[in-house]
Amino acid sequence: MKKIIFLLLSIAFYNSLSAQEINIIPQPVSVKTGLSTEKFIIDKNTEIISNDSLSNSGLFLQSYIQKYYDLKLRINPNSTSRKNIIKLELVKRLLKDSNEYELISNHDQTMVYANSENGLFYGIQTLIQLLPEVKSASLQVPAVHITDYPRFEYRGMHLDVSRHFFDVDFVKQYIDYLALHKMNYFHWHLTDDHGWRIEIKKYPKLTEIGAWRNGSIIGLWPGKGNENIKYQVLPTAINITPKNAVIKTDGVKHGGFYTQEQIKEVVEYAAKRYVTIIPEIEMPAHSMAVLAAYPELGTEPNKKYAVAETWGMMNKYNNVLQASDTTFKFLENVLAEVMELFPSPYIHIGGDEASKVWWKQSAASQQIMKANGLKTESELQSYFIRRIEKFVNGKGKTIIGWNEILQGGLAPNAVVMSWQGEKGGIEAAKQNHKAIMTPEDKVYFNHSQFVKEDSLTAGKPSLLADVYNYEPIPAELSAEQAKYIWGGQGCLWSEYITNPAKVQYQLFPRLDALSEILWSPKEKRNYSDFQKRLKTQFKRYDLTGITYSKRYLEN
Image (cartoon, rainbow, N blue to C red; front, side):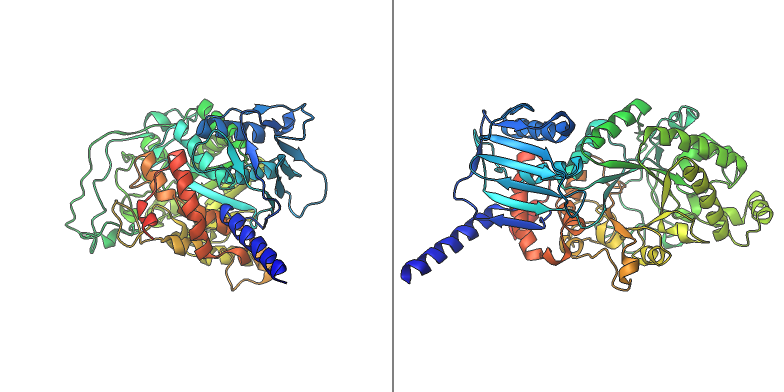
């Protein structure tokens, strides 16, 4: 009897020890450990077996191991060996999800199976997290059997390159961050009041003029209560800014743009990581960079517009595009070039924060409303979005818009991205439209991540625990309505983010929390367990050179 008890205790101890070694984010659906006492050893003689159709996954793994462990493995599609191999294989057996994978590791080999190439790629990301967090001549992989697939179809992350421009190399690095966390959509915010970032050959002034501003605001936006804090809620109306406020800019020219060849390069790079890029071309508001280049498209065509140098102040400076035939022809030409560059079936057209005052005081706008039987400026906005949607749909694509596109009536096939809380997403789901949940108070990573932040940030704190505990499916939706919650997304606006290190600091580790929200089964989410696994993740950050706050290590 004592021998049996000892044996059971030994097995329990071994399983506990093995479980400690498995610190994967996002948490897989199923992890079985204790299958063997022996680990798989990756050394200079280890081969990756994968055929040509799986080269993205094999090459990614080969590149990662070479970059961070100085160990170059050979990819050998013709090998018949059954030992010291990493085998990547597509299988046709019925799995629960098209993105599902299985990872089985034992003394002789590590095998990753999937019924799709992107599923196989996700398996590689899990294998990477089974590797040591420090450089070693040989890499030990624990004996494990993992079965895994995502909870949500849409798992997105956003980057604003308008307020501050980031070069192609960093955008690629950003996409790698998403891939490592099994995210599959990159929302690229390419245009705004503060800079136009994509070459449009038919309209060269968009980049000659619209891609550059003459300065950027210094410090926080002045407002009551902002003087003694390090973060700030960005204003949405002029009346919250004191009349005697002194707004200073640095007078430093800022800008940049991506050529169409660079766009193609990034799109191809992302595709190899199974990340779909959704470009955003803002309209009808957030278009000051457009109006600086082509003032005839505004509600005050004789005015000399300028690319915005300050954030916020929507009602005073954020003019809108005129809903004229000239404007629509311009936008159709722009979107036609954009859609040629991005194979994504989705195009984000903005639609947020359009101040109606500009249309209200424009005689031409009022005439357009009258001619089309529109009673309010909200209906004019809906008319604007619907007309653009008809063009985009005609090209075989679907539009995504911020939740304000609900105003005046939702376009027939539009996807709603809900940022002002959950209300827009709930309303869209109830109308049987896909919705992406990205509430500002939870998943805007430009917000501070601590109550007292050491660096300049925008918005009230979005704490790591708050991000992790966010549930994308609102409780008030029925089971049928909940099916329209397509997934969720984090947003990173760059008002106060001027360099890659600050991007990393704001992104990590909240991206880890977001990835687990969107990938892992709801019932498996456990914040205390996540925090334990995060300690290992921080070591991976150190290995790969990612900047993050050391304050997390104090707990």
